[in-house]
Amino acid sequence: MEGCHSGNIVASLVGAVVSIVAVRLVYVMYWTCRPHRIKQHRLGTLIVLGSGGHTAEMLSIINVLQKDTFVPRFYVAAATDNISLQKAKVLEESLIQKDEIGKRNIEEVAYFTKIYRSREVGQSYLTSICTTLVAMMHALWLMLKIRPNVVICNGPGTCVPLCLIAFIFKVAGVRWSSIFYIESIARVRRLSLSGLLLYKFHIADQVYVQWPQLQRKYPRAHYVGLLM
Amino acid sequence: MSCVAMEEERVKKVVFVTVGTTCFDALVKSVDSQNVRDELWKRGYTDLLIQMGRGCYIPSKISEEACSLNVDFFTFSPSIADYLRSASLVISHAGSGSIFETLRLGKPLIVVVNEDLMDNHQSELAEELAERKHLFCATPQTLHQTIEAMDSSSLIPYQPGDAMRVAMEINKFLGFPAE
Image (cartoon, rainbow over the protein chains, first blue to last red):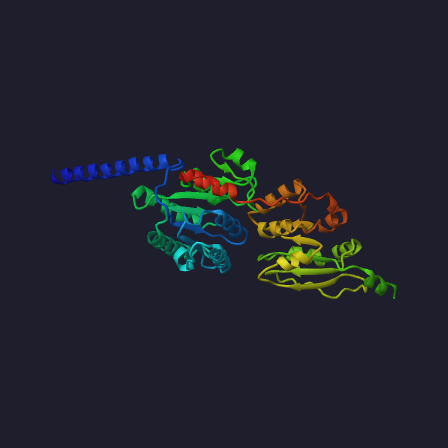
């Protein structure tokens, strides 16, 4: 009897928690993808860099964003990628040169971090499990430290766990963020896997595409023309 | 004798080949092949400079014929901008970085698609831009035919895009004034 009774309590507790989470999830999913009025004047911005063409496209976006609003900026790139963060640093330094209103130090506005990749090309599946776990923990630790208001990414696989954590933060009430995904110019006919995941599961608030035929295929995406 | 005289008369015209950070031996082999070299020479090019990336195929610098292209190669360079600027024709892998860097400089471009790549979404971009007549698209096997048939005056100059619309959309979504 006793065991049965406590079993009932546990079951109803679990039920209550599950329904609270479910209600919260629905709430978050409702407000994701809907424009909102932001009251803050400074938005901590996480920028996920890919390699080569991806980085060039991303930096062209950062170059035209309002630098006093999207600040501080946290740049993240894969640990094996030595060039992308360097290019971001060059951009940030040139922005400081241009900034006439009170010279600021780069340390106040921009941070540069490397992130472990879950799997390198050619790695075996057994070691992949370990490295994936390490990568996930590292991503979580980084996100807890940064807690961005805005996430901007454009394609590398590393952006999916980061966006997922940002989404979980929304559900858990840790931090509300707006997630923007810009599909790379190289994707003409289909979204990349990262883009597709963030689009299908409503994780990204906005998905931008650079080719009109992609917008026709994915109607919730927004066509923004070519970046390069 | 006549060959040397001809060579002196020729204006230096460089063909720059780039494979980016990839390994694309099929392209390096193709531009190194005698029929591609002959075709480039026939079209008035004098120099062939190859950025070969991580590939292990080494092009031959010496040709059997006295009258032919000067060939040179290197693996990587921090920036290929200067090489692109000095080139009269660019032959590139299908990476979007090299493609748009070349198009924005207004150089005639042949993109060679790597058919060995598993997820070959890169050919999408090259084919789309070829359809819009911004560049020529080839494979390592068809490169010499593309060079033979190409007419660079048929290319339409590429109008560079910009990121303003993305920035405006982001601002609009966050409720900031669009400017």
